[in-house]
Length: 377
Image 1 (tube, helix red, strand yellow):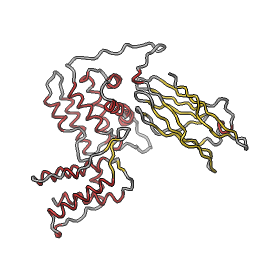
Image 2: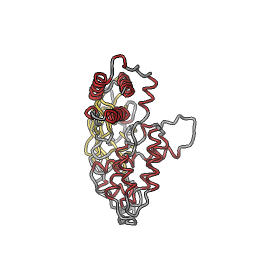
Image 3: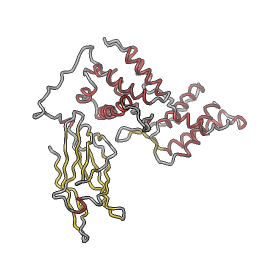
């Protein structure tokens, strides 16, 4: 009990460096919940599950917790342990900052749940699950050891290995034809959109630049756990494969309406200062399926967009300084906002808005509005 109290005290001290209302660091709640599970076992007669914290899901599929709620529950369990199990003279010393930091950086739970692994061990349906179980076990070990390159490579290997369980040849075919819930399809889309990071892990050659990949780049484990649960619940007979969609010539290709993203733009602010004239706007996916952004141009100026992909209903923020541009000078005839994007089938789409300008006394032009959108539908 004293050791667990000491761990929990360390987590409480670590919160002093957290100054945001929400936290997306899964180690925070996983470590707390893991310690509470240990307390349940040690106690034998008491359960402390009410002090566990359940993360919430954001619109983009990422999980987070309220820092205030975390502090309240952590403080409550510490007070209870101190009054019920520890004498004042038994109160343990606090861990050093370095020890607490190392603990927080090390995941304390498995990436793939044990019950899912057990499900595949007991499954008898004609498929051989030996390799899949081996890949999952290696993933869990490397996740606990915080080995990001191995984790990313193994997530990629597993998603390439399991599509036949649902009757498809490749992961891309599975995603294109998935007919489950919207949430689960978004999970699959997130796994697919994270593949460039796996490619970076596997194929980027050595250079002078520092590598930027860390455990934060490993996909949220809920995505793969949910896919594996689907494979357990709805696996097809060994050898069965869904019919492939007929291939169409490029010229007359039929676009799956379920994969037809539509990106819309809306101005959020227009402001001028000594630093220049800044236009800010939101880009929202109002269509179906995943949109993969390829480029955004405002007149003659390229707009940097941080988000590379947008799921259904998701939005990205664009902001660009057009000072000194031909658009700002009014030298572009019929200026446009152009958003180039693709779906997961690499079908190309273009959203265009007319950019209405307003002249100024000094000969420059302000943006008045985005008008007459063309979504290419």
